Length: 225
Image 1 (cartoon, one colour):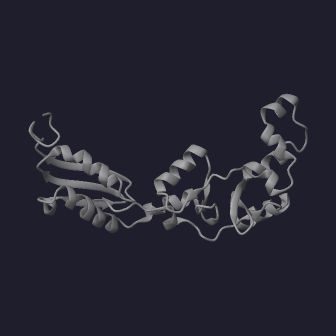
Image 2 (cartoon, rainbow, N blue to C red; image 1 turned 90 degrees about the vertical axis):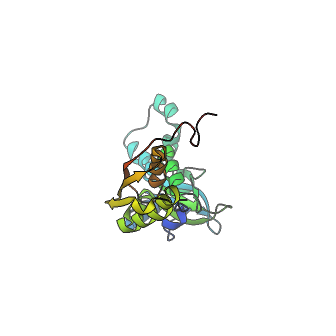
């Protein structure tokens, strides 16, 4: 069977730039600029994450700097108007923080980022203590796996598993993360299964099945009884 997928702890950054609740506005801007980050966790106590402050949280102060928002705009954008007058991280931060656990899969972390429209996620333990941070770029690290490493895993965990009798005759070629499978198999109904399993291997960009064979008969596995 395919190996256990990579998890967040495999790719996260453990050295994290963060601020406390009382960090002033200007310090937040300076820290983001110095460390070239677009968002930071806000911590309390010994490192519990209570929120996240991002560039988006800071921009309302500039947006409303030259003019006061209209009554309509105040009602429509209550949060932004409040942040325009904020002076500390506690007033600026988005809370509760959108975070992820270290044992979450990369696919789970990617889905959270996509659904919640964020670029970075604090990594926390069961009581909310900061362990690291994972970014979109971190999630893409799996695509840096060498083609030879991907080929070896595909052979060992997919080809040998699905086609043990003819695994020696199945050719696996990997180029720039694209896996091509060639060979003759006994049951073409397994092609879709092979594609799904290969696609699940970390670092695979795409799968090109070029497998030939016979279709399973009506009395084969999974046929109506």
